[in-house]
Image (tube, rainbow, N blue to C red; front, side, top):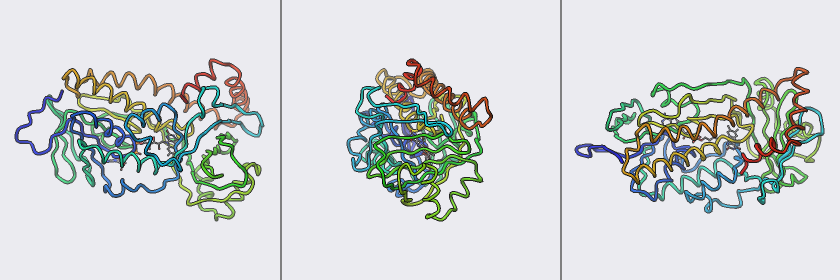
Amino acid sequence: MSKINKNNISQIFDIVIIGAGPTGMAFASSFTDTKLKVAIVEKLAEKVIAKPKIDGREIALTHNSVNVLKKIKAWNTLPKKFVSKIKEARVSDGNYNYFLNFERNEIEKDCLGYLIPNNVIKKNIYKRLKKCPNVTFLDKAECTSINVKKEFAEIILSNKKNIKTSLIVAADSRFSKIRKKMGISAFIRNFNKDMIVCRMKHEKSHNNIAYEFFRYNQTQATLPYIKNQSGIVTTASKDLTSVLMKMDRKKFNQEIEKNFNNYFGKMKLVGKRYSYPMITTYTKKFISFRFALIGDAAVGMHPVTAHGFNLGLQGLDILVDEIKKATKYKKDIGSTNILENYQLKLHKIAAPIYLATNSIINLYTSNILPAKLTRQFFLRFVNTVRPVKQTFLNMLK
Ligand SMILES: Cc1cc2nc3c(=O)[nH]c(=O)nc-3n(C[C@H](O)[C@H](O)[C@H](O)COP(=O)(O)OP(=O)(O)OC[C@H]3O[C@@H](n4cnc5c(N)ncnc54)[C@H](O)[C@@H]3O)c2cc1C
């Protein structure tokens, strides 16, 4: 385990996590059954983290993710009135009526996944974290410098605190400053588009079906939420999204109704519209000596395939296993060979999903004729060739 000399040092931890987003907090909560001393450093005030604001993101979670949340005891406490089931997903292209569809019976479960507002997930994980006696929350603090030594890593915080640890785990978003400080670069792709997310009430039922419409000037998705409400997701050029963001509410409702060909009947905006720039990141390495990246800081996915947090949970689960194995055999949890197992396993899962997602976006945002033909062909191909469809279904399990 940790090889820190514990004499004369005021703050010593086994693991220091930077970033109290959902991934950092879920990771910290995973060590409650251990004797490890964990700290979580967050630049925002703890009261902001405790009561996260609505951010328009309705997070689609896979069964795998639910299992990780169950492991850290953050699933059964989620208020079920905020959770809805996605029973079917349909994907269409251009102006065609053909759908690629995924159904719950194809994965032998009662639903394909669950839809939960991001602020509800974050609040619930924070509540769980607060019940972990071995986790210290250090808020309103940024890391100003990191010094990795043979026996420990030293972190200086903006509040002048000096902490020492066996392992630093950065979970400080896809624009991770810590990653840069550690000299690790990332493949960054700017799609030069924005995604608008909002919730809308509608007249007709969504029947718990999620839709993705790859149109020629924009992509629109609907995510079936509770009580005849859906998360409406529009990805388009910055010009178009800025018009949609500023549009008065009545006109916006009419615009979205028209886009969906009145499929949901009358539609009405609930709350605000939120806009996010579409920038994806894939970090060139997820680890170095006494250092690991998790969540968006490791892989910042395009939200179109809803894999970001799902991948974050899968990754942290792998790292937690490696750390627990290492502590069992009294090994140094910051050693490169322990962390390399995590890196290898995460690359194996993340690289195919990241590349497939970016390729889908390339294809379905291209309007040249060969691409339009391929777009149609691809949907039919996936729908009819069983092993190909199974690959996509496996991502939902
Ligand atoms: C519109 C949209 C829809 C999405 N839908 C889905 C979906 O359906 N399914 C899905 O799985 N994923 C989805 N995602 C992705 C998901 O939201 C992210 O993967 C997830 O929020 C990443 O969590 P994180 O904890 O890694 O990072 P973040 O949520 O970015 O948290 C980072 C934390 O670190 C803190 N921080 C940053 N810098 C520092 C610093 N220097 N020092 C200290 N603290 C710092 C921040 O304040 C923050 O608290 C969606 C994303 C978007 C934008």
